Length: 633
Image (cartoon, rainbow, N blue to C red; front, side, top):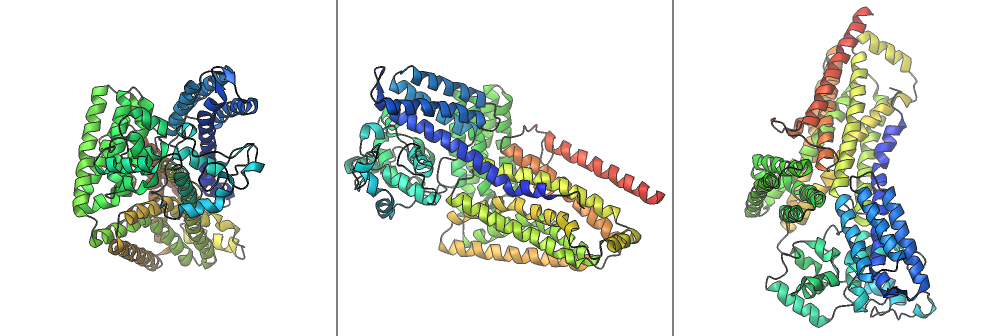
């Protein structure tokens, strides 16, 4: 198995880091655009430059935006936003009106967020009870205890620290812009990047700082309006609270600006009533249809993808507890809506698909809310998640362990165990990083899972052929004689199979548990832990039974069964990998009339089924070839 080198392992290990690097580039672009939108109107007015150094920075930053967009991954919208960035740069060079420049910078921001699925909200509403003390320890020395830029060290700094109480400049600042500045810093100033702080701590600071420009009276007025039921359409979830500026809220009229001021001080209020993942999906679907009717087809599609990845998918286990058929129908209806958007179907057809999906989403929301996440429901949901996500990995690992025990190569077990233990550790590290340092969106999660599944399929296909080629007693004995005293270098493939089988499930499993945990109370959380423990015990028992029964089989039959199982898993992983990339919007999906069987990797789309059929043909041809070679020998 020396053909399997370290490169695939490095690819799977570094993929989250590659996604994080892309995400950081995107965040840097958004931070520069935010800086231009806020600062340019202050330094260029009526075609005149009021501060030459600051103006030079605006020219430099807008040029960087244009260049960095060109470094983003290939995307159908990349050229459009790069061209708009060039327009922004030219407007700044021509010293055009500040409002025009700021509006274009915000437009490019929104476009990049939609086109690249950039996560712009915290995982959950931050708790601000200790934010004042945290601000005092990290920021007050420069910005002052009142946020007015008159801290003890301010006099020695050039340029001076920002005055957060300046309403004119604060009107152009979003909480997300503040978060980005805290995360990345500002080049050429004394504002450092607070990368040593966790994402949660940086969001706490961003929300706290955003409050300096609003008065207490304004927040009280906003609270009264919110409690009266106003603002629900403008702030259906945390995203608009984070991305809307006070200036944009003021332009909306009514109580919107006051409500924004209140929600910035009490972000958890927007999630009062346990804003469920399905409710998030419904909100995102509403936004998607609004974007479609406004002629923003690409944004409508991206919002439809977000509705599935960031909402519905997280509630699948709960829906399965109520009605697995409802979950399947809703999933297919949402994909039908996305396909109609992506194919450019007539508006009437797209809206019909939208209504069908929304009807099923509403039913799922009603039935899961009626269920009210009892302790029994939490236990069953938790049990289903771990069994569903761990079953495939256990089948592969147990089969490989039985293979090593059966054939007397127990020295290879250390490679097998190193693979899956390493995958669990890397999954935990990756999730910790995603929770505290970066935010991994649903699309990035699906891309990671999809690419890892396809790589797993290729590796398993090779391993299956390798096992079948050793299926005779004579061939295996010859292999053992050849490898006696081997240091273990030939077992990299075993470690790789074990690693990939477990790692591909890590992101999704933890995310499902996080969603279930956030919707549960004290007793419900105990039930979640109980279901998880019961599921782990079940998987361990299953693995023990597979190994126990397999070692009793005749060697030839054992090899044949192991090869067949691994080949089947290769076909399953291929279908699941294609489905994950389709869910992330990275591959097209052409629906066909087939039942959806996720456990077997079968989804009703042409691309996934076609790849699976190709693999079945390759497996059959390989089997016939190896059989012919055996007869000749």
